[in-house]
Image (cartoon, rainbow, N blue to C red; front, side):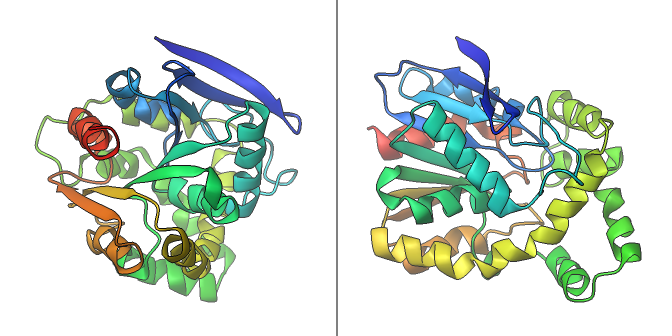
Length: 281
């Protein structure tokens, strides 16, 4: 059974899904863009007998508070700080960490700061290596180095319905992706100030890449048990990013799945089985 809850952090309502017995090891599920915790709707039932699961929505995403971008700093540093306080508030001290897309720079900020809290890591298309950046990032690099209002406005197409649907379906087999996830994501783009807060995060993403060496240093120093379960047809974060974990962490296993950017849409059962085999069996 999944419970749907919220708690107040610095005046923000942070929504989260919780499942499994608290006597089991906790796993925190950090979602990506343009999604929210609903992306774990099929994975949670597969893992709830073996883990205590917590899946929050970040500020500005899903069912959590979405303050105006002129009143709230939409940066990855700030969101990670809110997530730290969220975990403290609900008394999660030690946990496995599942990171996807935006969840990787958020989760690895927390892991780098509190390495003893991390029991193990599942990275699903959650990149922390330059080797894992697809071709689109070259264009973004130009924007970051030479920012203009015109270039910022150009990124509004990242929230267009066709773009979001393409993120879900690219690299997948015809008819294998349910419309549920992308339909809800598209609905969230219609909320007030959505584009502006997401455009702030697109610009700030450059600071994630600058922190890659810090994240990699954390892996070398702590060698956490890690499995990279990757949609190998993802054009944003390519399979080289999964393999790169082995450079800094010999305690790494890689599983490449024949799917795209959102592996849980097509391979939730396989993902769950790989997690259980690696961390439990």
